[in-house]
Amino acid sequence: MGDEDLAAKFARDIVQLKQTGVNPIVVHGGGPQIANMLERLGINSSFAEGLRITDKATVEVVEMVLAGSINKQVVLAIHQAGGRAVGITGKDGNLIVARKVARTKRDPDSNIEQIIDLGFVGEPDRINPEILDTMTSSDIIPVVAPIGVSPKGETYNINADTAAGAIAVAVGAKRLLMLTDVEGVLDKDGKLIRELTTEAARALMQDGTIHGGMIPKLKTAITTVDGGVEGVVILDGRVPHIVLLELFQELGQGTRIS
Image (cartoon, rainbow, N blue to C red; front, top):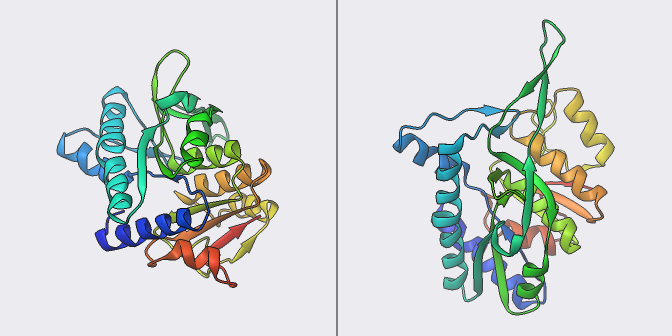
């Protein structure tokens, strides 16, 4: 997302998929861009368990950046590649009904579990995919910013991978491709793991091999596969045309969880 040439190639790949009869749905994040805007506005931000702690001021910036800036950049890139895209958030069509995330962390010294308040950080409670079904049955490519809304109307920042996984299950997707800035899931020696079962993925998180931002990705992969999606692939988005390479080459890329 930080490289215009890679973004253009990604957009062309998505358009090509649509033209060949595949119905892609794009769900994007924007961590670095959010961090830059928060810094420019003088708003402090921190992370816990790989998720951004989001107060009222922060969630307003998150929505502004994701829905207002990044979403339209992705839509424009797809248009310039010859496709038709429509940008929405989880608020549109009541797509993502969210609940507040509850996280706990065990103190290593006292062994007492502590509740972590992440503020306005949510997770999908219910996906209403009708708006996506309407789009994908036409020539439109949906581009979704992961902002959810609670039944009370509260805005929640949702991890993009978590949102994508929930949407993949709800629409009955065959694949979930998660583009990131690393090669895939790495073992303790830093070597790429090409195939993982959900059971093996859980073990890697438990023994500390996986940490930081890869934790929510693997958790999402496990939940998504358990929800009926055939496979989740964590891919290196820095590689040009990685989406087409994964889908159309016999030897896949990245790490596949199934």
